[in-house]
Length: 196
Image (cartoon, rainbow, N blue to C red):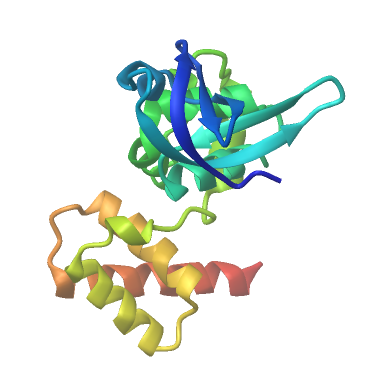
């Protein structure tokens, strides 16, 4: 499994690049925005995942771990193949995808080429609660709230999911308001879990 690759771009088109590494050329599928922004002979490093099919082996590359994680999560949804997952990331980006799931906005997924209403709803249903904030995007304020939630005994993953949800809905909340909203979200989630 090739999990990471770095090297020199020797060829590119709208959806893929070829990276030369130690005398070998690796064809990597990437979002069009990335391939178009690169220059021939430019050095690049990508997080990668290999997808094995009966008739092919394809390498998909991402500039951040957050994009890679989103790609892998989208791949768990019935009806979303690797190319569709890459298209979703290209059109919505990590932030747009997180917001669409957190606000249950399947219309954002329907706006992506090749994603129908049924698949859009499945994406929201399947990824709800699975998305967590990328460490690199957490401000000091959010980091303090996350630490407080963990100190109160909440699991890291649950605390991050709650913090993500409330920070997307209330982007202008201060630290105290964020903590209060996250605690309320965690309390609601716990009550729903207990009643099921």
